[in-house]
Image 1 (cartoon, rainbow, N blue to C red):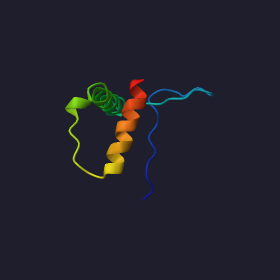
Image 2: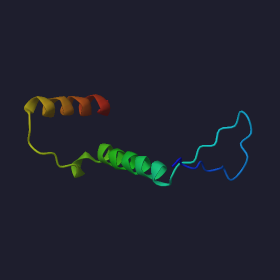
Image 3: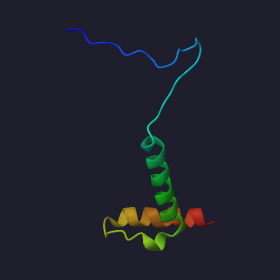
Image 4: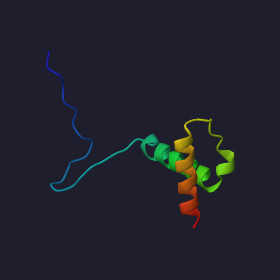
Length: 68
């Protein structure tokens, strides 16, 4: 049984682009950006686990460079 195609509710004019995004496609990246920005601005709230000392050293160097 062939699938039916749905017609568009309004006519599409040549050369126009109709893009519709769901609400979460805009909100989730914005929330992620705000959360990461908050961690950058206040790194005291970010509790990292102890791990590889090379990674810790790299993060400290990046913070020093970003601070100047």
